[in-house]
Image (cartoon, rainbow, N blue to C red; front, side, top):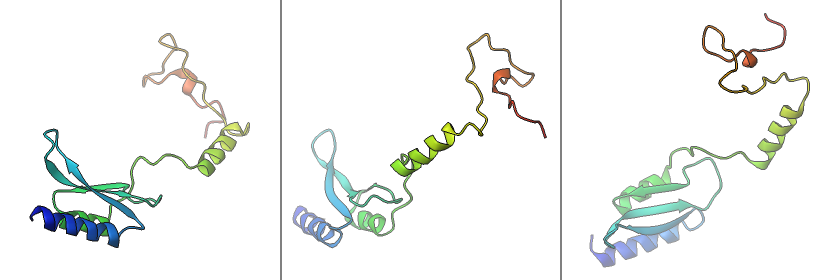
Length: 119
């Protein structure tokens, strides 16, 4: 593709997907164009950024992005986790005290063993 075609095609993608994606060109260390990047504007469980060598490849990924990985916890998830951690009915294992903490035959610190009833 020539530069004019690339620019018009990029503008088409930017317009067609304006509600969900921000489309831009990527550049190498030498300042020359390298590929295409789209960043998701919607906070969901889909990949937040997709990259491709061609605009056709980029559009294909924008239409069907993969799943999002490494997502941080939402404030509601954090609150639920903190409530569970604060519940005294949930037994907690103490952290190991250091290299002198005795270990069992499997190398697991004894202080990590469940203190509740054994089943």
